[in-house]
Image 1 (cartoon, helix red, strand yellow):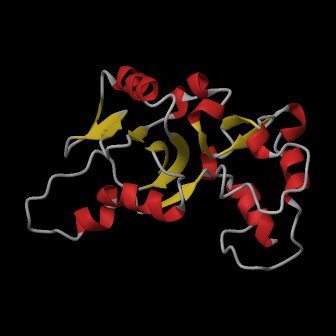
Image 2: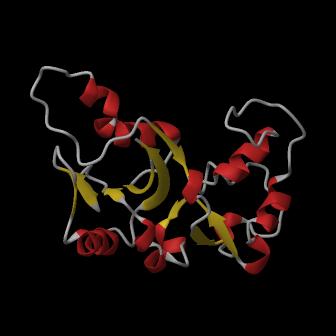
Length: 193
């Protein structure tokens, strides 16, 4: 199954930073400990993708000067100022998951228009929270969250027999969001277990 995971980081969410933050929840570690009494993580995954099935949910205010709106940038913005799986793959000329150079590259400025930039916002997968336009509108899609300290919370938790709903999950999610509103990146991750 696929689940929407919110990941808060202080640093720009590179693939290495994301992998490090999600590593404690890798189901390979849990399932490889047969015979040992190991506590199951709050959630598990066997692979993850930036955005994935939940891609483009964050709306970035791309009119801000640092995003160099309406101009060709000497360096790519996607993967440096914000995360967008679509724009990062387009820069390689390949819209599959291999990230290999397999076709005609698309200029970032043209691709950004298709992602909403012409309306002053850009649909992305990860962004600096103060630059987001819809930060308070996206929580209902979230199944699990990892805060900047590595603490994890999930909407439902497996109790070795069935999934049990976490009663205060929405309240916890809002508390984490309020705490990190002005000083973090938020990245939407598609996790699969």
